[in-house]
Length: 382
Ligand code: Q9C
Ligand code: ZN
Image (cartoon, rainbow, N blue to C red; front, side, top):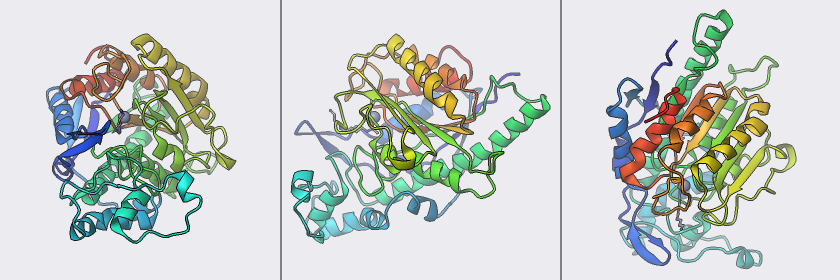
C-alpha cells in the first residue's frame, strides 16, 4: 500500500508576527537570517507537490498550560512584556537584545535580582540572535500551538496505524505515518528560562511534554508513551537537552557540528543527570562533514540508540542548515542526502512528527526539507 501524504500544519501568523530587521553576526549588523521568506520557500515547495503533502492552516488553541509545563513563568512574563518595557526605556525599535549578560564568572559572585529591562534581557537571553519584537511572544505562542495541533493529530494517526498493524489490513510497518509542523520561530535552543539562537519557546519540548502528560495515552505496561527526539539541525539543541536532562522520557538524541554555535554544549560527555543518565545522546560531527559521513552517523545513531529505546513516537527537530551552502553553517551535505535522511527515519517504523528548526539557504530550503519528507514517504528524490 502506498504511504498516505504527509499532513502539514502551518499558519499565516508564522510569517507575519516576528520579523526583526537585523541581528549581529561576528560583530556586524546583518540581515535577520531567520526570516519569513524561509517558511514561504518551504511552503511553496510543498504546495507544488500536492500528491505528497496535505496542508492545513487549522490551529487549535491548547492554551497556556502546555507551555508552562516546559518554560518558567518569570521567563514567559518577560517574553510577553519585554518589548513594551524596552521601548518605554528608550530601547531601539528593532527589538530587545542584551548588552550585559550574567557571565558565569561574574554571576557566581552576584546576589542581585535584575529589575532593569536591560539587565533582564541579559538574564533571559544567551546570545545576540533572539531579537524580541512587538509580537514575538504571540509568534512563539502560535508556533507552539501549531506544533501541538500537529501532535494531537499524530496521536490519532498513530492509533490508526497501530490498529492497522494488529489487524494486518492497514499499512505495513514500512509505511509509518508522518506529519510536519512548518513553524517559526524555531525552538530547540530555547531552554526553560532563557531564549537564544532565534528561539523563544521550545516547540518540540512543549509538544513532547504534552504527549507524556496525556492521561489516556498509555503504553501496555501502564506507563506514559515514550518519545524519542531526533535533532538533525546543524546546531546542538541545548534547549531541548536542558529541559529533559534529568528524565528518561523523552530520549534526546542529536547529530550536530562540533566547534560551532552554540559552542558550550553538545559534547558526548553530556549524557544526562539523575534519572536522565543515558537518555541524552550527543553525536558531534566535524566541520565539512559529507553526505556519506552524515548518513552513516545518522544510521548508527538510530540503530544504537533510537531503536533500542523502544519509543511510541518520534519527534524530529528538522533543521537543514547542514546544507553545504548554508550561510551560517559549515557541513558539505548536498541536496542528494536529504531523501536518504528521510528514508533512514522512515525505517525506524514509528509515527513521526517533523518540526521545523533551522536552515537558512532560502533558495534550497524547499528542495532540502522536501527531500527529507519525500524520503520519509519512501521516495529517492525531492
Ligand atoms: N557563526 C537555529 O538554527 N548565530 N538557530 C550563530 C555562528 C545564531 C541558529 C553564529 C545561530 C542560531 C534554530
Ligand atoms: Zn540550526
